[in-house]
Image (cartoon, rainbow, N blue to C red; front, side):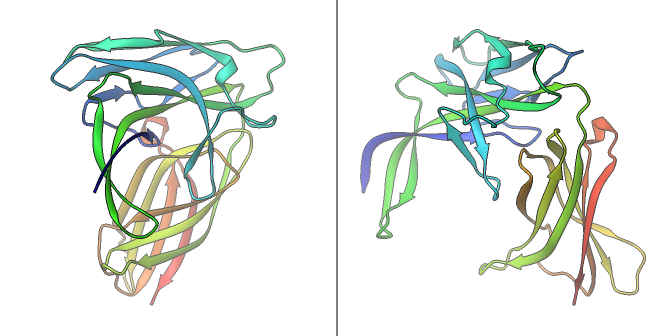
Length: 267
């Protein structure tokens, strides 16, 4: 069954690299500070014909499970950066394989408190033909094909001063899905006015051994809230008896310091 209703699928970027089928963006995260007040995002269109993209500043609130919810009117107390940066252009027409740069400039009001604020630059194709067929299950379980327009949202981080960040991990456990895939889940607790941006590395130490093996890694993970639960797959389908340790580290480019760890026994 095919329904021609059009909706938008948004990819809110939280990792270090990304390329959708027709649009490449780099970098996928922009940090603006008092010493680095400008930045840019390079766009490259990979389709076979020219395409127009509209660019907007939007705010997504993070939920505890890491999902992002777009807020048209952020409530007072949300740490939105929308009012603190400008960007240009606001619409581009991209020829195939031609790069276009979007420039971003931050402004720090004197009354702005120390800390990190964030928003997203939202890139959406607006020409006819920039739609994909996406399979969706209805509430009754019936399979449908809907037409979806893809959009990409790139986080823009505005940092004033040198805000503190403390991270703790809690409740580490493994989860096995019905199809046999093994994952881990852990609660991330953040305090301080800075946001978490780091790499999650999972180590397995077999019983009776002092050697650990990397069995999972997720790079460029963000958390904008005090408590977030992260769940990522492991690279193995089984684990021998021993210990499983999760480390959250600064990105290698920032030094790779271990910010927090959690360990659980594998029996």
